[in-house]
Length: 383
Image 1 (cartoon, one colour):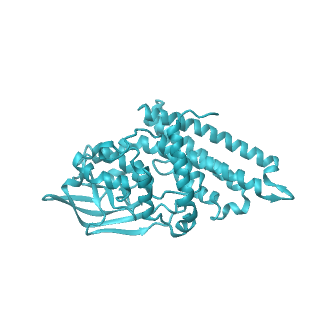
Image 2 (image 1 turned 60 degrees about the vertical axis):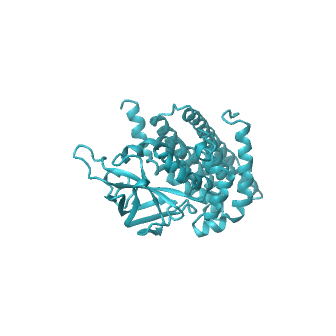
Image 3 (image 1 turned 180 degrees about the horizontal axis):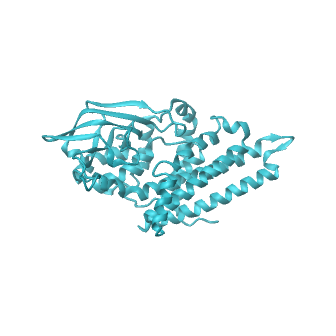
C-alpha cells in the first residue's frame, strides 16, 4: 500500500542518510560490532549531517522540526543496512525532550551547541542495581552543599554510558514522604569528567552490541547547582512525561527491524541453493515470507497512524502502549521465522539476521515490558 506520511523533504533526507550509511558505517561496522562500541568521532559526523539537530530548537542552532517522521526514516535506513548508530537514539530520543522541556535558556545556551554537533553526547541514568521499574526506590543521593550538590551512588544498564560527555542523573535530594514515595527525586545534567565519576563495566549484552551500556558509580561528585534540571524534588513527575515518545520510538524500531528481517530473508533465500534449486522456490518459503510481510504491513500501518497522531499531539499513553506491544511482538515473531529460513547460517553473527534477532528481543523489555503495556491498555479499557 502507498504510504502517505512522507513528503519530498523526507525522501531527500532518506537519500542523504542512506548514502552516509553506505559510505561511513557499512564498511566498518563489523569491526565496531566485534569491539562492542560505536566510535565517538562518528557522532560528530552524524552531527555534521544534521541528525542531532532536527528536533532541537532553532534559537540554539537546531532545525526546530517538531515531527517524529525523520526518526522513522532513520530507523528504517539503519535497520535496512543491518547497522546501528550506537547510543545516539538515547541522545536524541530520550535526552533531548528532557532538556528542551525543563532546561533554562541559560542551560540550553550552554548545552545545545555541543548536543547538536555531536561534540557533547548525552545519556540518562535512572536504573540502579536494586531498582528497575521501581524508580521511587532509588538510593543514589545528591546532597546540597553550598552552591553545589554532592552526588553518591551507582547506576546500571546505562545506554551510551561509556561515550557520554554529560548524563542526566536521577538522584534523591530529599527522603520520600509517607504519603508520596516519589517525592524527593531530582534530575542533574552531570559532566562525566567530574572527579569521582567512574565508568564501571561495559556490560556484555546479548544484542545491541555497538550500543555501549555501562555501570556508573559516583563518589562525592560535585555538581554545580546550575546543572539541576527543572525543580528540586520534582524529578519523578518529569520522568513520565516522555514515555509516550519513548514507547513510540521503540514501536518504530521494532517495525523497522521486522521489515529488515523480511528483506534479509528474501535476499538470502533467493541466493541459497538446496536440492538443486533456490530456497525461495519452495512453497513453504513463499508462505512463510508472505505471512511475515503481512505482519510487517500491519505494523507499518500502526506506526504510520501513531506517528501522525504524535505529530498532531493526539497520541495517548494507551495508544503508545498498544503500538509498542503490537510492533514488538510482531518483530519477535518475524525475526524468528526469518532466521529459520536462513538455516544454520542464521545462527552466525556474521549474518545480519542473527544480530537483528538478538537486538529485537529487548524491545519487549525496555521502555516498559509487554506485560506493563497490557496493563496500561487494559486500564484504558476500564478493566
